[in-house]
Image (cartoon, rainbow, N blue to C red; front, side):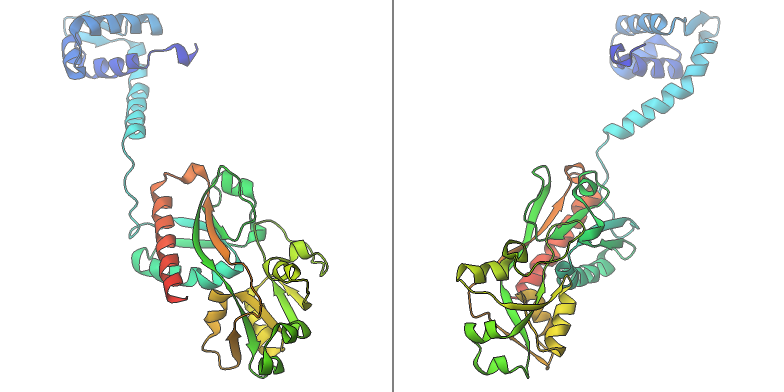
Length: 316
C-alpha cells in the first residue's frame, strides 16, 4: 500500500477511537460530528480490512487487529505531536553540546580566546572542537558535519549563509633591532627579507611558488600593482610562527593588524604601518542552510558575532 494515498487524519481518528471506544466521545474530543466520525470508522475498516471496533454488551470492543495496532498508532501520534511542536529554546547554561568550528590560524589566535572566555561564563559545559582549514571541505559544511567555518574566503558556495565578522587592515611586525626601522620606506621594505603567511578557504594546501603572485595573496598583489616585488625567504601557514620569526630572525611579517596588535606589549618588536596601500581583508563566518534555524546553532552564531564585535572595537 502506498502511504501517500492514505488520509493521515484517519490515523488520528483511530488513535482516539481506540482510547475512547465510543464514536460519540471520540467525535467530541476531535471536534467533529458523529456522522463524520462514523464515516471515518467505516473508512478505517476498509483500510485495515478489519472491523477494528465491534459493538458488544460492554460497549465498543477492539478486535485483535485493533489491539495490535494501538501501541503503534499511539507512538506514531506522540512522535507527530513532538515533530510539529515549536522547538524549545537552547539552554546554553545546561548544555554539553559539542560545536565543531573550523577556524583559520588568524581566527584561532584573535577570535577564539575571547570566545572561550565567554563560553566559560555563559555555557561552561559546552565543548568547542576547533578544526583547521585542511581538516574540512565544503561538503562537510554543506551536510552539517561542521557547524561553521571562520576564515577569509575567496569563494563560498552560494547556498551557504555567511556573515562578515570584521574587516582588518595590515601592519608590519619587525624586531626592534632590525636596521630597517631606522628609515622605514618602500625602498628599505623591499630590500629587507620577509616571512609570508596566509591560508584562505579550506582544503589541503600545496607548496608555494615565489613567482606565482596571484596565489601569494593581498600583500604581494598590492606590491605588484605598483610594479615591485618583496624578498620572501620563509613561507608559513601559521601567524604565530610568522610573528616569532619576525621577533627572533629579523624577518618582516606583514600581517593583519588585529593579529599584530596581540604583540603590542612585546618589547622586542615594533608595529608599523606598511609603506604602501594594501586592501583590507574580511573575516567571514559561513554555515550550512541545514543549520540556519537550529536553536543551538543560532545561539552560537550570536555569541560569535557578539565576541567579534567586542574584540574588533577593542583592537582598532
